[in-house]
Image (cartoon, rainbow, N blue to C red; front, side, top):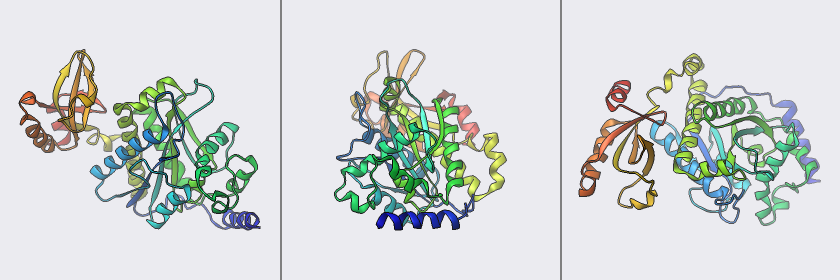
Length: 358
C-alpha cells in the first residue's frame, strides 16, 4: 500500500510540476555531501576507501567556497568519518533550505579499465552501466537499521524498484544539468581529467532533496591510475578546485544571466586562477608532507627537476606575506619566500601581482 501511494504521489509531481529552469534569484547556501562514511566505506580500491577520498575532496571544495565566496554559507553533511543515513543527508539539505546540493563520490567497476569522471543528476537511466552506478551508491541504505520502513520498501538491489524513482520528473532537472555540465567542463579543460559525461540515474539522495543537485563521481578506485591520483593531495585539490569553479560559474549565471558571455570567455576566472604560497624547502627526492610537521598545509610540486614544498594557498599576496613571516621565525626556514601559481602552474610573482592588481 505504501508503495502504491508513493508511486501515485510521484506521478502527480511529474504531471503538475514543470521544470523551473534557472529561476533562482540568489545562491546563498550550498550543501557539500561527502559520500559514505563510518561503517560504510563505499567503493574500496587497492589502497584507499571512497569514504576517505570523498571527505577530503568535500572539505577542500567547501574551503574554496568559504574563502572566495563569503556570501555563500557552506553546509556539510559530515566533516568527519561518521555514518550518515541517506535520508538524513537529504533532510540536512532540506531543513537548511539550501539552494544547491553537491554529493561527492568515487566510482568503481568490476573491470580495472574504466577511468575518468562522471557527474549525475536525478532522472531516468539510459543504460545498465548508469543503473549499476546508482545501485552502488544507493547500497548505503542496506547498512541502516529498519531501512525497509524508512525507504518505503525500496531495495537498492532490485531493478524494478528504480521504476519508482525514475517515474519522478525532477523539478530541478534543468538547473542540475547546467551545474553538472559545468563540473565536467572544469574536469576536462582545467584539471585535464577524462570526461565521461553527464548522466541521469536514480539516486535516492538526489530524489529526496528539494533543490537542484548533482552527484559527482571523481574517478575509479578500481583503476590504478585514477586511484593513485585521487589519493594525492594535488589530485584532491585539482578536483575540489574544479567543482568550486563550476559552482561559481553556476552561481554567476543564476544570479545574473548576462554573465553568460563573460563565463564563456573565461575572463572572470583569470584573477581566481592565481594563488600565492610560501615555499620553504626543496629536495632532489620527494618527501612525504608528514616530514614537515612544523609547517601547516604543506603542498609539493615539481619544478626544474626538484621537489618543492609550500605552505598556504592564498588569493591575497598580503596574506602570503604574513605566513612567510611566520614560517621564517623557524631558523631552518628563514629563507622561505613567496611563489605564485596560475591554474596550478608556477608563474612569476610580479606577473601574478599585476594580474590580481596587488
